[in-house]
Image 1 (cartoon, rainbow, N blue to C red):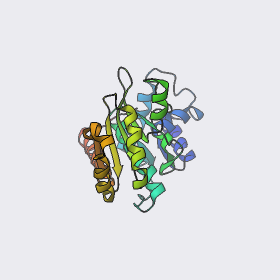
Image 2 (image 1 turned 90 degrees about the horizontal axis):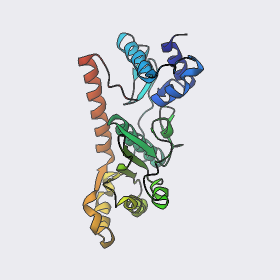
Image 3 (image 1 turned 90 degrees about the vertical axis):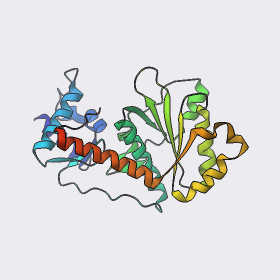
Image 4 (image 1 turned 45 degrees about the horizontal axis):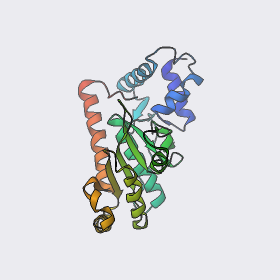
Length: 247
């Protein structure tokens, strides 16, 4: 069996889609020698990208998600679908982190993201690095999404708390502030209707000292950020004939 046929088998096993981590973890089921060289990941990426360039057998449906050519993508959840929207936005945050070459971690690995993929299928870290004292790391593990620098010492660079209900806003602030002694950017991602509550809460005395470190991003802007990166990635592929090869 050829490598490209093995990749297709992996996608079929997963219902027609796969992230890089799924491909990497399962490729040897169908191509036992897939990991025999030191640059095996680059080799797999090259095989898949060449096939997508030359044929319609596969397509890219996310920043790091691929599917069979005839796969019908899942529709995007609506704001009213609270549980699904929460994990969907988490997935977008993770994919954007991967695309921008951060290591990514989520507190909700078993949550469904999209197209038969769970958050653990797109996050690059399954456990959070022991970057500080045990109690700080333990609390940081509860943060929805964390971007960690991939070079040098591994510290949280950006955190994203998804707030679909204002009742969870204080908890999101407090979890973020566990990292106040690090150079970390705090992002609250929520529906636009929660912006006023965010501004009201951030003005409370308890948060004043760290007020400037928090940023509010509404769901629409987060989606636009994701779509913009996806468009740029596709344009680059058309112009230069290769995709941005991310592990």
